[in-house]
Image 1 (tube, rainbow, N blue to C red):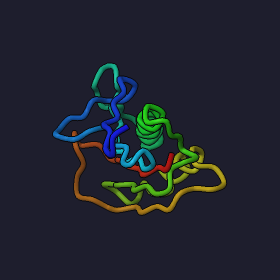
Image 2: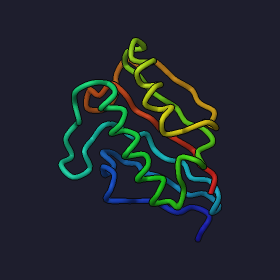
Image 3: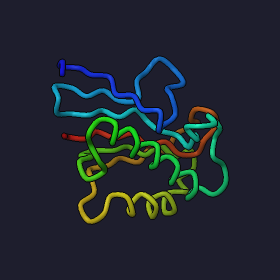
Image 4: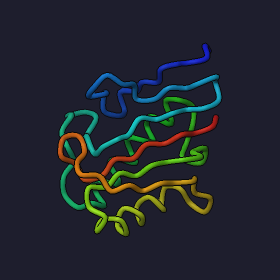
Length: 128
């Protein structure tokens, strides 16, 4: 591997702008771009409850992590972006199921808007 490798998988939505799904740096760090609740096959936003949207986001993020050779267990930091902090508890409950008893460091940020009008986006940094 070079010091900077692009990670791409068809199991997660394609980038909708000038960015990569993830970059593996120095063969050790994986920097995953934010994932939103897009179905990777249809390209459509998964709508419904915030829990369903968060599940789709984490499925997409998991696919990108897997394509890089990493998993949720190797995530050292993540960021959750929410358009409504009233969704914090519900998102947190879904998130906690994926990260188990040793979750990564995390930041949750309220934002005024997200791509395609979604309510949640999550990014991650992993060590492989």
